[in-house]
Image 1 (cartoon, rainbow, N blue to C red):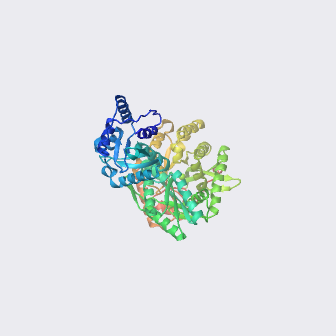
Image 2 (cartoon, rainbow, N blue to C red):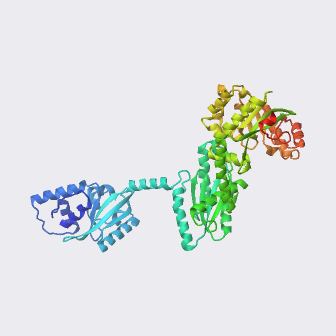
Image 3 (cartoon, protein in one colour):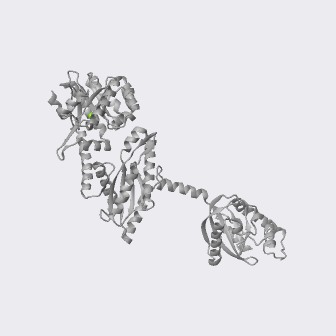
Length: 590
Ligand SMILES: [Mg+2]
């Protein structure tokens, strides 16, 4: 029995008990009951005291301990094991795993015990263990074999309950590898998964495609309905993509509205089939915030090995292709082409040049007149950028770059300053000047104070002639910011126009509530006049609604006499467009 104790105790670091060859009362019982030995045990007083002390010590150890004989029967258990299994000492002694655990668990315990008996090597294993009440815990069991002259080969085990540790590890793993909104892989997990795809390509020549998916207009949803709705949209997108993939690839969310997919394939048509299926699934309406929203996504595709055989190139090429798809037509897909890389390069270079231009205050602001019949009643200030290296750059190219890079704040400030200067110099008959304000500008905490400072410095009543144009989408979700501007004493004279009306999702009650002055009908409704009857009906409805709210209506993009005449016939009296005047430098209007 000396060996019996000397096996258990060294398993605990810090326990330095010198074990004598003694047998306690409890051990006497199992001797009699289990091995039925009638051997006379002679114990003196000192030995009995030492045995009791040792048993108390083993029972005080918080880790569960057990000993099994070669028949896999428990012949010794400590109190911690009784507690772990939810059974008493007597309910455990003499029992095998099949008496105490579900068969599938007992099979594993039995097999591992056999392994230790045969190999006589220490074994550490992680197992699930279900207690008497049906609660399953994760345990780590360290098993060691020892020989006893009375008992023969025995197996001694010490258990560590690692359930909480496992749960914590799982939580940490989720945080590290799982996207919190969709439950899909995050970027770190994607990096690991992509390594396997590359290994498969190098070892088995298994081709794969990397799809870069970007939800169209998520920013609009976030701005309009709030981020919780935007998050729901992201979650739904993840679910829909996963339902198309059906385990045939990997999907991860790697950014705000960006997903990447890895799909093994043999022929290109397989990729086209999956991509088109994803786009079709995403186009199905989704009910959020008590509205039916229709979302779409743009997808860029890069294939390994044709477009690259390392992840950095593949992700970059798929990303470039996605931007091309978005530019071409939202809700579409594009396979990578070499020239897309130069587009991205141009974007980066333009951002650097734009920063320089703004810092040197070299951005130009042109003014386009707005007419009532034949008289100019106002102007729209429009940013224009000529770069010596790149030539004339369209606002449709540099404004998104300014938005993405945050340069829009500085740009907006310079346009506003130019508008105020123009009012003071050239609008002596009271003509107004409107400037376009983006959500990024409006949300910025400095916007209001910068505007106040520009107006204050001008030392004039320019605010009475200043107009802020906000797009329809912005009007809906920027109430808080707009209300704060509208209600501020220093800016009370500024007027507000709704720009590009008819292209967004209007909350008409906001038009009235926020006291907008004018609607600008988007050029999309004007370009097919006078032949488009549907456009005529829509414009009539807009004019009717504007009249109800005491608002004026300006038609944008008027380019022909026929369009103008048609607009006058249906009750629109304010015009802006190339027919009447192109945007020009401020001196032109002097
Ligand atoms: Mg405008």
